Image 1: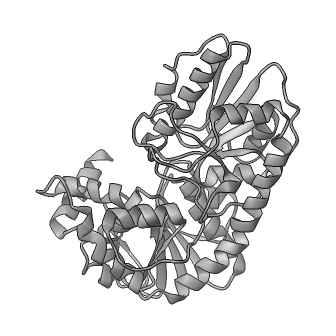
Image 2: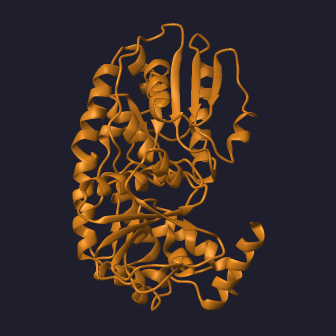
Image 3: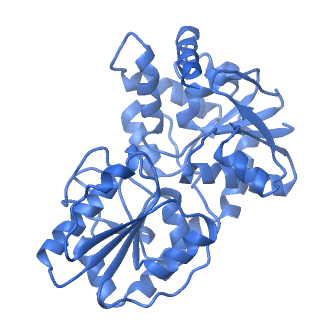
Length: 396
């Protein structure tokens, strides 16, 4: 290969967008291979690449046009983009898929099935195709949660005992003096459909606790933006429970706010790692697709297993940390110890150097091609791809 091409066009500011941008930036700095990035004209990655003067070639993405890909490149993209590869990229090239969300492929299949005559796709029909991707070294999973959920969903048989964890650069930490008059909790992350039920779950715990403990005041700082943000403005607050809605914060603004305003953060994905790198106490939360109520428990990020930074919620889980325990740790001034443990977990498992070396080795070993992909059910038929292109064209 003479280049690596990142395919993740997005106008959203989110953890996955940062993940692929940072990976592209780090590979470009090594100088061993040319780096290209496919993004919208007004996409998030394109704007950051240009404003930071990065040595990365931009390939402009348009919703109703196909892009010709050089045969000497390897295309890296999330597993959830697998149908989009066939839809928007043409040519013979190698592929490497990174599964970075447990629900990503399932949601993509359901979305693609909207253009099919069959409304309820059988997920186990795709198991052999996933086995095929793995046999060609063209697929990796970011953590145990991704793997185990999808094994259960798609029934593929290949044994996977290695992961490619997500990463982020370290942020500058800082000590915060505890305000004895109030507890300051925080959320960092997008406020879209796949995250909003988790945020509502945290709120339900706060509301229940404040109802039972009138003498303790809790302020919940919500940092992030998304389509579901408007629903949070309807949440009922009380004398001892208030919310602060903050738009997306980046770079030094985020670091300063996190260090100075929040005692304990609730987070998942890249957001949880960024906070852990600062030595902030991080509560790792579960992925939820419906309202659960204040019945679940949590865990500190340093208790995570198999690189997991977010697990699909089930009623039966092994989490031992109650919301009351979290507040007790704050009141007992245990946050410095917990914050240090969070940072050590980050340094051991999720630094850039650890993951980039692993990715580059894996990319050099993939034998999966765009031609191979067309032989599987994980691609759009000609007819359905044309319908999707037409629908997107009229949205422009």
